[in-house]
Image (cartoon, rainbow, N blue to C red; front, side, top):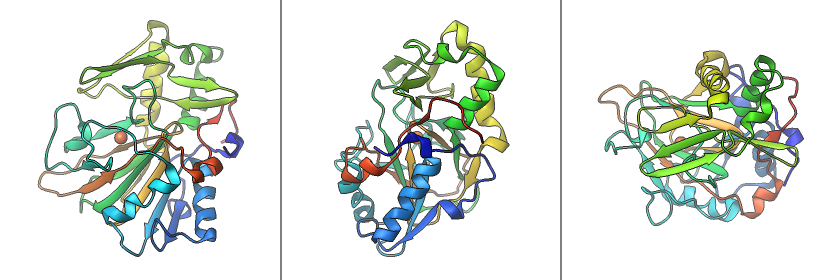
Length: 277
Ligand SMILES: [Fe+2]
């Protein structure tokens, strides 16, 4: 695994163009393209792959399996592990299937072992609204360290936060802290999930939610057809803005356990000690 020291926080001013890598197809990148992808991912925790061949096809997305490992389970996944993300068929308990804003979160927060890597392939973007939104867990960690000096430890304790959805519950640290590397597991109360911080960390959790809601801390952008967003699920939170009524939008989600060969050269998490922004 590459060193977490490479990881940097980001906010709304980050250039998306610098995080976008043009490739032929996802399953056939040149060495230079792969290096560019790893450099972008390792620095900020995500990259956008813009493929020109077979762009937007299921096969192109599935071509990532040999790199990133086994697809993560999901109750709505098909046999390949792909979950359709569209407002066409709202499903109870899943904000991604609605038109409402999907608040920033890490995937699999209801499980004790969330997936390590998320990928989202854009099949059809919305003409209006439906922007993808990312924010940096490392920037949030630095913000909390400044606002609540000396109280960081409580967020790393095993019962800091309990998250429940559709019968699944997980009680874990908000910030996992292992071997000098930190990772976030996070969900905001969104009307579909029950999110309960331990009483002594309620104020820190509320500040974390405010941080992720502030425009200066959010990078919002529109994926183009065929684009695939890859992101470190422990270092980057993701969400989506509201989709106006009648506006079609279609993405495919395929998350991974990060056991594939490319992952040995990828950074997961961020340094536990605050770094300069
Ligand atoms: Fe998600």
